[in-house]
Image (tube, rainbow, N blue to C red; front, side, top):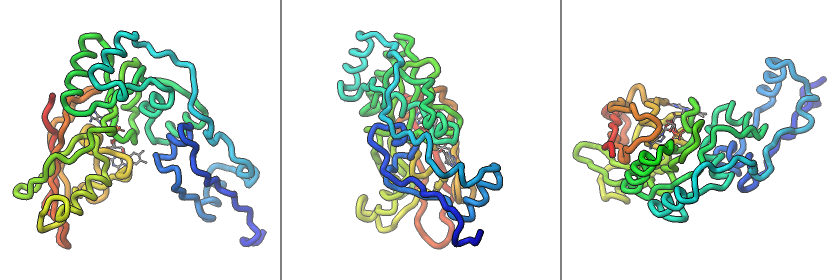
Length: 288
Ligand SMILES: Cc1cc2nc3c(=O)[nH]c(=O)nc-3n(C[C@H](O)[C@H](O)[C@H](O)COP(=O)(O)OP(=O)(O)OC[C@H]3O[C@@H](n4cnc5c(N)ncnc54)[C@H](O)[C@@H]3O)c2cc1C
């Protein structure tokens, strides 16, 4: 068959419905698409011994609204106490929030979501507003023997956001995403752990406007998951990325089992310039 007559799939590019399985595995970008080109399509068929027939009809699109029957194993008293600590609106027990908190963005996460395989969920998702909330939540859960897991961007890879023993999952991104200070003297920026890569980088690039500095800055850390990962996640996983090996050094103790009380991280905010900036340093912040 001539290449112009070659079959090419009609890739799916509808916006993922809100609260659907698909909206979780679309990386939080329901309107963006990047489909394989023709060469990649041919390669896929060749490597996986597939034919055009396999691509005629899309399957397992995950458009359904997330819904399952997994009970919440926290008493109403415990839930009330969590609400007292973090605020009523910051404690969620709906199916969507619980599933979204537990799954990462690796291929086995995407495949399980497409097949609607639901496992290792937290009983509730709690969104701390600040360091004091984290402290009180951890203290309360310790007394009540409720497991605590934290998540940032939920890009994951090693399934660290899953909750095999239930408990609560702390959503660090919801509120704890602020920049605390930029110190141009020693070139460090202090942030809350839930700040996403692009938000941190935009703020550093826009430092003259935001902080009244003469120069613009960069954090110099660009993992491939940059758009969907947080400063807290980078530190806990001791992340690396393009340029990071050259520009960036990671220090500090990341040995935090499951939950961190750490609430602020410091990054060397290198200047933006043609020459390589000084090596970047990422320090673990204060343990609560
Ligand atoms: C497609 C893809 C590409 C990737 N590319 C790279 C790459 O180039 N370089 C790289 O290093 N990694 C990469 N990763 C892995 C992952 O993105 C990184 O490990 C990232 O640093 C995780 O950050 P996050 O905010 O998404 O953390 P999450 O996935 O939310 O959490 C990861 C772990 O950290 C814990 N955690 C998160 N925040 C906190 C907190 N505030 N306190 C305590 N514990 C916390 C969680 O409990 C979990 O164990 C990639 C992942 C994917 C899916």
